[in-house]
Length: 406
Image 1 (cartoon, rainbow, N blue to C red):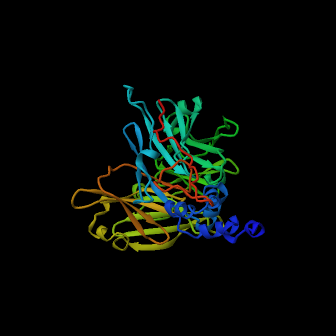
Image 2: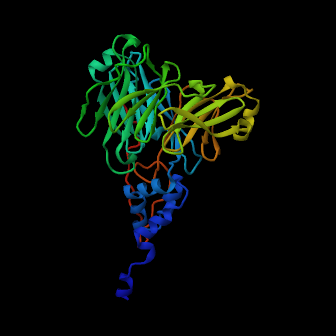
Image 3: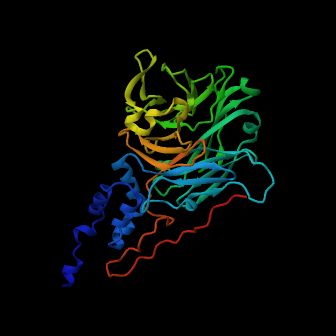
């Protein structure tokens, strides 16, 4: 009997169990519930290696919710219903102290690879926030860049796409460096591994005037892309490999309005455009010809009433793209209905399926937060997993308090 008990059963094999769990839909509660029967399954589900397998199998992470700047707090708005719903207070962070009399100038620059990038211009610093682990890093903005950059935007990029245990990341700041918006388009890169900023990268022959938009950038094929508000509709491109900055001329697409357009992933790994204009939603892929000339090829045209039936009667000024998550290949659509209520919808770009988050939202930028949640700081109310002896496995008890930077 002792020999029989020592024989490893198929469902004790982590490779077999991992392949089974990877085929579940990526909603947080499904993987967590499936890991309850034994300690082996639980340890596998919360491992960084398993999260890498989830990414490889599903490609796109689920959108757990959206972030919104609300007074002095970065507020989290959950996207799922129970049991997948993340309590809003678990993922929010206070950016400014409540007792301070100052008016703080801060903004969200974007979400990527499970992290949120915040700029606090009052304190001249950047915050890199991991909602699941509650890790909050403070990065000082270079003095020369802050003093001379007329407009500033940025992005956070993590190693291993934020799935593994690595805490290494890079922050890329872009702006127009010099006198007013007549300066040179520029960029600087911060490495968490070295703790220092790299040299200033500029485009001396860039257009004048030049101004970086406030919308978050898009990461595609190891490059970051930002809209420019001047020249209108042109694009900033920063190559993470060569550390070079370039400008892309306005895409040859009619009806581009930055409030109703987003730079998105293309099917070949490059970039494309999503354009929302009543009564249609269009997607394009940017293609380079043999001589380097760029064209935009139509990928998809969808009537808006096929996406959201209630939008059929909406006017163009009442609907716009409020956010984009490349990790999830999804956009956030904001609409204003005839009852004067504001709604947010998360629309998957591949299937055009949508989920309604809810009413009573402000007309603010929304930053969708997409990642594979399989453990870490407990956010879902699930029963404790059982071990092979019928006992319970002790869960890691995370701090439920709200992270605060004062």
